[in-house]
Image (cartoon, rainbow, N blue to C red; front, side):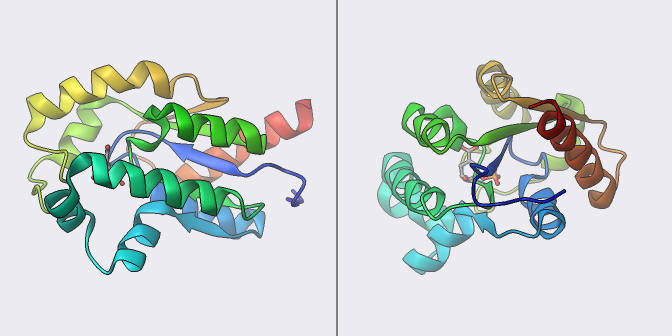
Length: 179
Ligand code: S3P
């Protein structure tokens, strides 16, 4: 499939642990385009981890950085974009995607699978993760918004990253062919 700058970008969304960054790298390779990881960009610009940013600026400060960074990266043109699980929950970020004519892809991994992946996560790895019951509540409040994505790719969690990336590619192709 030929991916070009006329296409408005592919935006991977989904809850913590669904594989946005891992799939994003492979997807960008296959589409022969850039991969932008919003959280990694924030960390390298700020010179500190997301955890440290939460500690020093709070979630509000992090969300401001996330909005600024995302809008700047998304403005660069074609690419595959992955951010944290909260990025698509923000109406301003959703407007940026809409403005770019981007294609949103929800990596839909069932809660039980996410729970297995997130179990044992430390707050310093994921500041918004406290424990599984709290994370489940957060997941439930978000999943309806994630489902607004243009494409939902169901992943059982049994797939390798390669296979998951193939599944995403297949569905992108279907959409590209149908339009
Ligand atoms: C967040 C998820 C994290 C990170 C930050 C906030 C969220 O990224 O952006 O801790 O709101 O769900 P991952 O989804 O990559 O874990």
